[in-house]
Length: 259
Image (cartoon, rainbow, N blue to C red; front, side, top):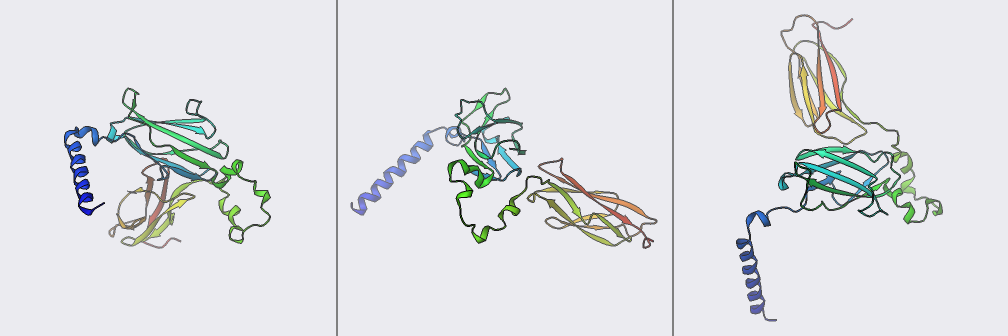
């Protein structure tokens, strides 16, 4: 086909496309058809180890949604079956923690859809999120059992110890947890995450002095220079997404060294 014909076809298609955009109501072609939902910042396939924390982040504001309903189905089920687990979150946008604790290690499908203030479904459900709960072990029913492997790859000798998190707990704190300084002196404090990924936290000083951000996750406390006597202060941290996760450090400001 001659180049002139190709260019002409492109012009016709382009002109037709933009004609449709200008004739079509703005609210229609700009309106998203599904809610925005991510699980551990992924939206199609998520791998979770046993007891691993799963953070579900959603935004219903573009479709004016007020609630998010989530249904978890076993891979052998249909969407007409009874879900193995359900969650309901209120609010236009949020970041929530969901748990697969108690479910067998297997492959699951999450169906997420929004509703308005009256609980009526809005638009279409979000794209299905497939969850491999248990990581590679979730596929054991679909593959030969591990026992059939005669030799273990050297690179995976420590994999069992590294991924055994069944009894792990999570939390946040401040390091050091206790500091003794004199008036006018400073102390550097760092956020610490236990068995979890870093996330946004709020810092709060309970007492006198100054608390200043040095860099992400690092703050500096400066005691009052004119303080008389010994006083005890606190620096508290709290997760923004999960307010139940808190930590604190105590700071003793004394004009003289402790005995």
